[in-house]
Image (cartoon, rainbow, N blue to C red; front, side):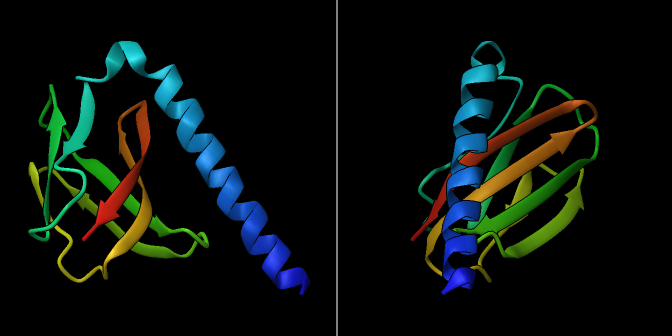
Amino acid sequence: MAKHYFYITLFFCLFSLSALSQEGKLQQNDVLGFYPNPVSNGKIYITSKTTLEKEILIFDVLGKKVLQTNTSSKELNISTIPAGVYIIKIKEEDTTVTRKLIVR
C-alpha cells in the first residue's frame, strides 16, 4: 500500500514541476518545445532556435522512464511508446522545458 502512495506522490510532484516549468517559461515558449500534442503519427518535432544537442526524457504517470535519448535532429520517433499520458522533459544547454505529452 505504501508503494501506491509513493507513485501517487511522485505523479503529483511531476505534474507540479510541469506546471511550474510551464509558468516559468511563458516568455520562452518559442525557444524550446515540441509539436504535435497529442501525437498520433509516432513522431514529434522539436522546436528550438539552435541546433545544439538536446536530451529528451519521457516518463509515464508513475514516474518510470520510458525513453531517454540525445538528439540534434528536429524529429524524434516515439512510435514504440504505447498510447497514454506522459511527461516529457527537453534539456538544451541551460534551458529545460517540462510538458505533458499525450500519445494516441
